[in-house]
Length: 62
Image (tube, rainbow, N blue to C red; front, side, top):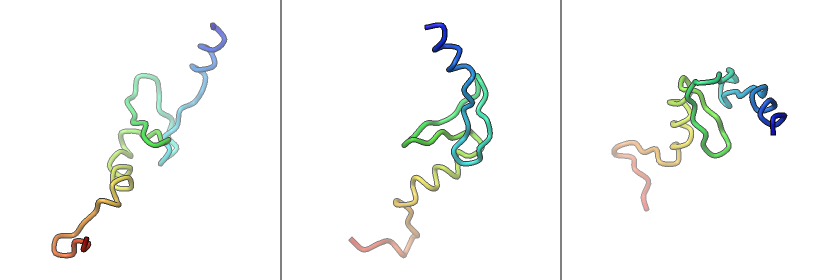
């Protein structure tokens, strides 16, 4: 078990969008296989929610 814990600590966790390392104690979001740092969260949200995007007056007809 000790070896498993050491391996986990040594692994570098990187933001899927920008590639920056996410350090110990730093918050990040894990969603749909992506790990996203706080700086990239707005862009990630735009990408994930793009199917829901509408423009007033040009809504998709159902």
